[in-house]
Length: 211
Image (tube, rainbow, N blue to C red):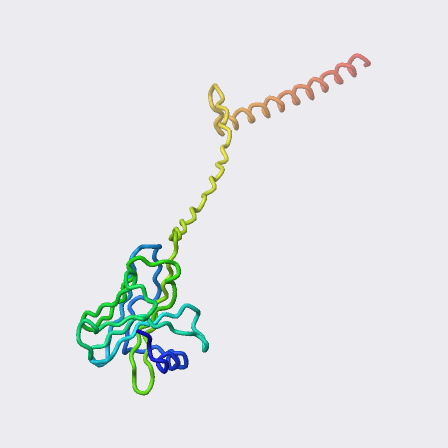
């Protein structure tokens, strides 16, 4: 089913605005190729009889961005035509389901070509009301999380002082050293006195001999 031309033109011209009426639970989703992805859109203040659309935008949002019609849930239609799909949608890959207030978009075996921004939308009055969008990235290899860098601790150098040489024999205490110095001084004074007395005695003897 192709969407009406006025719907595509209105979607291209409508200003994308964040709305509390539609809540897309996941803003960014990355999956590996051929691994399932589920996009969810919950109605908050949207009437239960409103049509819910799923659109895809392959380019970054801009004034000239185009929206690709994927699926439509129309509660006014009888089963099995309640959910209708776009003409180029591969239903073996992409299916829509409705559970109460939640509109689910299921991608069973997505490829990198299915990457884009997925919007749920309903026809407001007078504006189109969009969800915030979910950026889906389908990659062949998931990026590995960066390992935390380990802080290298530098070993501190320990300065080792040489062991003091232990001297053998009795230790010289300050008292012993003082007594030793005192004895040396007394000895020197006694020697100087003895030399002085010897000199006086020699002079006296020479005088006595001359007389």
